[in-house]
Image 1 (tube, rainbow, N blue to C red):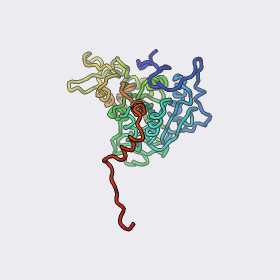
Image 2: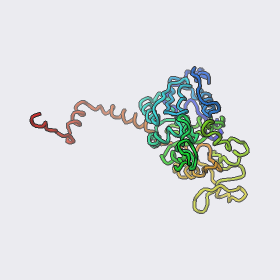
Image 3: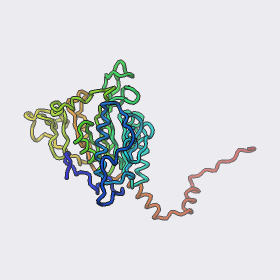
Length: 363
């Protein structure tokens, strides 16, 4: 079975959940089992509702025990997520969810660890924590809700807000160049990077499956609507006619195209979107999610434009490399196997790299 991204669907033996206890044969959970008894408290029309429903509907597919799934969040509207899932979870501190989740993943191989964060939480105060979790390739699934605004703190501009955007904290327009979360993740050597959208349930679920299948750091950017402070920012991608012309579908092995337009590589090696009728077939780009060199995926991520004229959507990169937490467990196991003794510790502490501090006279 494959997803609509042309990738294997998450399965009971998915590498991303290797080592996590599974349900007994013949036992199955449903969306209801992953729905907590807490009242969901987001603004009417918030895209978080659709994402929550998709995640609750997807989690039973993993075949894992609820007590072995953990969702860690930071601060922001998206960070209410753990309350609404009947799994273990933690509403942590601003920007630090990746750091806390790294500790869990490194010490508890029996857990499937997910991070829920927003564009402000992840890319502002949490920027360093995010990029280091990605470069280390910790076995985490990071869901980054991007609504291009600070919602919980009432409408200030965020690290993904457009230049010139007028907000409560930028009444004359933002001067900051915004982050592209996908480009940032690829630059940090993330082994899995994808983009999807809150209102496209089928595509969102497919991306979640692919992320769960992956062993290592998985960054999923989710375009999410804030109906109060940045309403309709992604509406052109939700209109069927507009979406057909704007969304560049990333499917492994297939041409990167949107409607009658295709992506080609020009004489300088750069990517451009041109009408198919004008394209040299030899220059049309076919997507390769497993390319070890991330430069092609990065080039695709740079096709974005503030007016959403062309938006690559799908899995940009999916490669395998050693994970930080697996390597750490192997290192600890090796140290224990080599039977480090108390004498070894004493010799280390009393080695040449020590100093004797004299006690001042008369003290």
